[in-house]
Image 1 (tube, chains in turn green, purple, orange):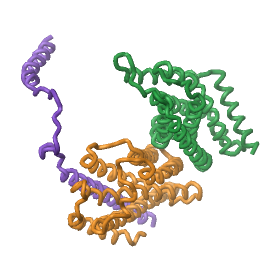
Image 2 (image 1 turned 45 degrees about the horizontal axis):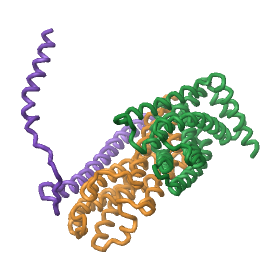
Image 3 (image 1 turned 180 degrees about the horizontal axis):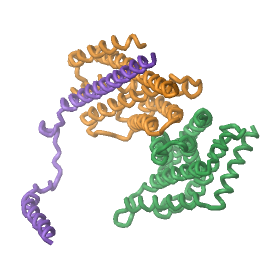
Image 4 (image 1 turned 180 degrees about the vertical axis):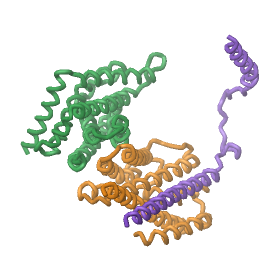
Length: 227
Length: 87
Length: 219
């Protein structure tokens, strides 16, 4: 068991080391997420103000678009340097490799969300500090669900021809339930009169989806990645 | 230059022809008038919906059956040809 | 299964030809009137849509984990049929809804998740078509995720308050509505099984043709 986490930790460290040197994926993803928020703000704003209740939707759209980009880029880097084959050939548990990549992606998305959430709160006057623990839980569980499926699919598509367009095409129909839960839960917290039980319900559903997606992804990673 | 003038002339003509039509539109209602039952002219005819639904089902199913049948015939022809060539 | 395809197709074609008269004989529903008769095609399509997803998932599992090569052909057929029956459901449904609910579409759990499952089938087929070699395994992995949707779709109308009728409607149908429904359901199911087998046979034959071509090239 500890072997599993050791391998995963090695992979996370490797990804972080590469990333810290160039910070390429972090900055580009961050800037992309901010652009998405701005584009949506301009699309929706009327008479200088945005309608109420759009903050949650825009936040999650930005996370989902930026996340797709980040996943694609992380595995593109592996493909470009042909290191994915080395990873697959390594005498390590495949699920451990998957977990390592997943944790790396989660760290990256976490950093992006740390910037996004205050930005959205600022632009849309959303009460992000009213229920901080619940908001963090919502974001964490939603991102885990999204990233769990995304890491699997991005790894799957690395050697496929139209991978850039196919990744969102494959990913979104499956992760939209997670997005819906995230948006509805966040919207319940950002409302004029926050609805805590509702947010808790959506967090519960998100945890349920996360468990299912993580289990299925861990299970299918090996047969799908084997040539 | 000539082309530009021609385009302008066309535009002005179109504007002149359509503006009486556009200006003659009925005024929007000034207040709401409730009514008990929707008048027959305003109702959506149910038979259209039912016919469209059944029609679509038939067309889609027959189309798919035809597509499989033609592909199957083609593949079986190829198969017999290849097997006879093998011998 | 192969031997039954011709009688199944013949029988289901005959039944579907006769169906309009049987459906006409069924009583009108009290609030919806004539448009409710879309139900007799909508319900079988919807159930077979979900069944297709389960079949695709099961065969994808067999292909991925039990390494059965032939299962892949069945998974592909099930996915195509899922797309077909999903299209039937998602077209007949809104046509009915426009008259019964006043709108073409609502974003309630059942309709949304059905649309998502339809999109999952579409992306599965797109991956297989444009993904290049080796995309069968990837698509099989995806189909397993898609299969998770099915219980959710079925149960969603009972858990959430939606415009869509609940699952309790069908078991409690009066007999003169039940007969045309199960008649159409039988016809559609036979059609489904026949098409599934035919499509899978097509795929398996294609694989044989490719193998023969390869053997020829090597010789």
